[in-house]
Image (cartoon, rainbow, N blue to C red; front, top):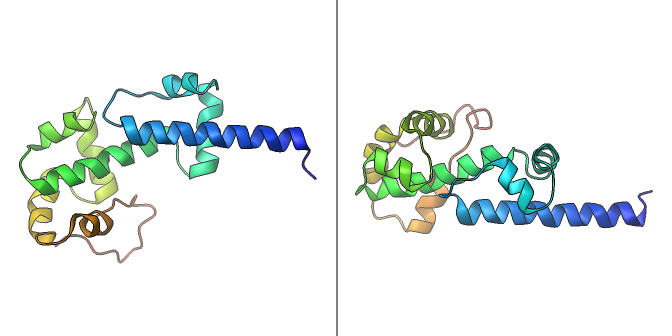
Length: 149
């Protein structure tokens, strides 16, 4: 049986993890690192990373990159920004890292996605386009998952 103080501490940690996740969701385009996120909730970077992974299934950095790639996908679907402009707009400082992570999550390079997604989601309500095009990590994707054609 779990003691009351341990349960109380666990609930406090979960609240702190939610604050970190909310900050990532809100400030994804800002320079964020695990140390700064941890300082903001008075945890060590290592403890934050371990607890975040247990609670959300991925590291804070992976969660941040997924949010950035989701936003990049929306900007690329609009079609009015270059891949480089999108990269910097979502808070990435390296086009190479952005392209690599984008390809890992989406299954195609950002330039290819930009070309294909514009036609594939034309006329689709934005809320549905976001749901249909949500990135799925390749290791989590079903083998037969269809991609934008």
